[in-house]
Image (tube, rainbow, N blue to C red; front, side, top):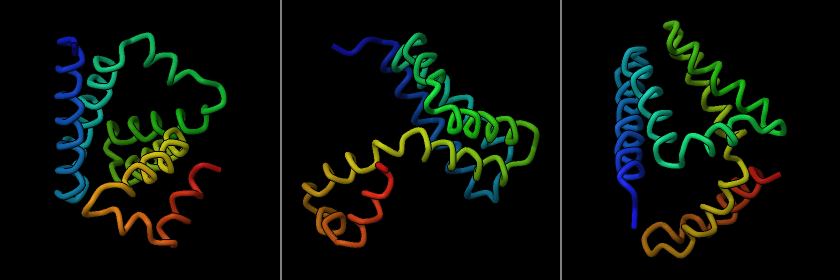
Length: 131
């Protein structure tokens, strides 16, 4: 059974992604991007719990990605949205890079997009993230 915190956290993460998407669509509107960042981080904390969130963001082997991600959040909050989003994207790729090949492998079995993920160039692209 899913707890209420997990349900609320998932909703907040969805809202965070929505505001981040809208912020990018509206030419990097820093207010929407900042709201999306705050909602995403709050939702992540509620979804996986405060102690696991702190443990994830305090791993020494991922310090470059952590600093890049939170530096990007700070830049967005200080109204430098384009540079902030680039830095956040780098941080997310560095933090979750090992997860991308796993997600791509599971998407190969999906009926509609499976053929795209089985293409050799796409396989090579996603396999380079795990290194």
